[in-house]
Length: 409
Image: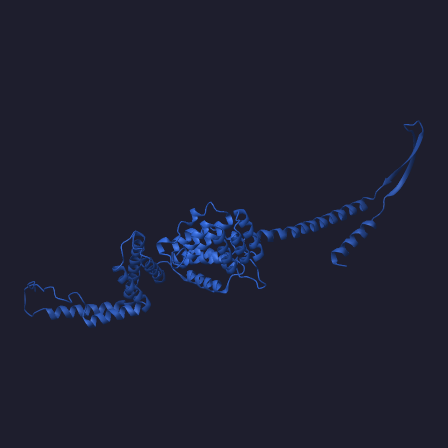
């Protein structure tokens, strides 16, 4: 017997051991009934001990409080599964292959497909083997089914091919799929968004992916992974961290390759500081991507201006740090050198201001370039203060900037 039960037994025993009420007088009364007969009733007058009554009230109140506490705990235990169910709404779990097959066949029936060959191909597509299918395989089967049963979906899917020219890749898939059923619309948008992201069209891919509901697709891990890549490449830090959190913490059955890359992206974003060399390097990579895609217009030029401004600020900070670290010794040496130079240029006993006639130096090749010794010193300064890969990236960037084609983006 546990402690609470033993306490109850003791409390009930204490109640029954209390002083019982004492009967001190009785009386009998005869009164007529409704049938004209008389009925005898006995009355008893009792006196209750004040001490016993007080004890009974206290113990009853104690028992009531204990029972109320147990009832509250019972209610809380019943509510805890409900809380777990509500928390589970934030977890993205891919559906089983059998459930997906049921949705696919229901969608095919709603489409009114009657072609026997098409129905046979769809039936063969959804023969589930003994080995469990991955979410990627299930998603590919869904896309192949959409190609078989819907002509509009087939046109969009066939446009997402390597051999198709870049200009004809689908970018208006959102309005094109608005009239489709929910099942087809969500999976087509995810398919096109993945395709555009893999071709580094991050802006267009993100526009498609943001309207996809991850709870309505069979591969939520792929959705969050592709969206995080777009946001990471476009330096949308807060959005990327949210997508990575959903992928790593709230999505089940995430492939290991997704998880490994996602962890690297999260670490990269956490370490990235604003207006740092790392951020400048990422912006330069973004400009390089835009130029490869033939986008050298206003948006690209704006990013280029941000890069130049950031580099100017970084160079100023480095120069200021060097001046501060040089101290007074460097200034004294400069003064001595200036004084020595002034003494060498003066002529003893001369009173003229020392002006010379201006001469035409011509326009010879090499004018404005540093001497080999000075150029070597400048390169040494650059190599000391900046990593080698940043110097190479800057040189490549300005070379491509000089050869960029004109455009609007």
